[in-house]
Length: 336
Image 1 (cartoon, rainbow, N blue to C red):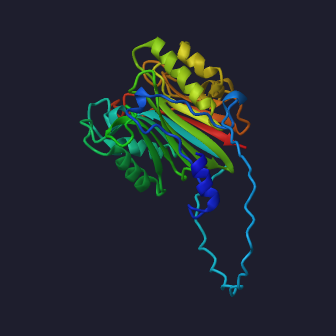
Image 2: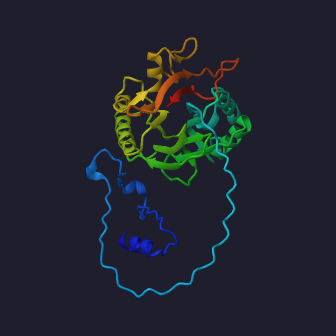
């Protein structure tokens, strides 16, 4: 780092703005875990520090420099078109069952994307999307991006986190779609159970940075889910506010893994219900699949977000068929 910093000061990189990436260049990252903390971590003991040693600069004889003619001013850059955002932010969470296999057993991404567009979300957080696997044999992140753009007339952006943490590989995973560009993206592989990951992104909405996280917890082991929830909440604690985390948590609200999230995050459905603003449909009280297991959480320390409403969507057609074995949940936030 010292050698690189000296090169930066000397101008060897052609700019005084230099970024350093700290990483493990060895084998599989799942076998060589390292924790790196940001400078806004709640514990000052683990924040990174920068030490600068100043020496005496050598004395040199200045060389006269002939003034150069003043160049003509550069033409102004063309205006940049950026998507506009309002004071409401619509977040959709949906497990789409291997990328679009309905309760009739048929694979139909168009059916899923039609419903997505109908719900007019600004951000879509998805579990069980597949990239070139036997479930559909398609690059589903690109398929859904194209379908959403055709159905909404908007440009969509995404970050995909493959389930084994092999970021460039094919496979199942979690994805975040956004109708506005990302200002930051990242992915995180859980140490507890290596086929669980987190997709991370940041957007700017109504002038505020919003940190987004999409994950999917273990379906079989309650104790493992608690360890995963603990690891995820610890990881996210070092990330900037305001934070929204969604996913198929495979746990009902009374389980320990959900209690772990509830320490620092508010359940948007429960908040909406306390306001009389949570809606579902006849025979449904918020269940997304065999109970309420899909969640949209937001950080309690956020002063930016307020829950306006939350809804579990009835996606059954006239035959009672759903495009996925999960029901989507949509929360509308007011952004101050």
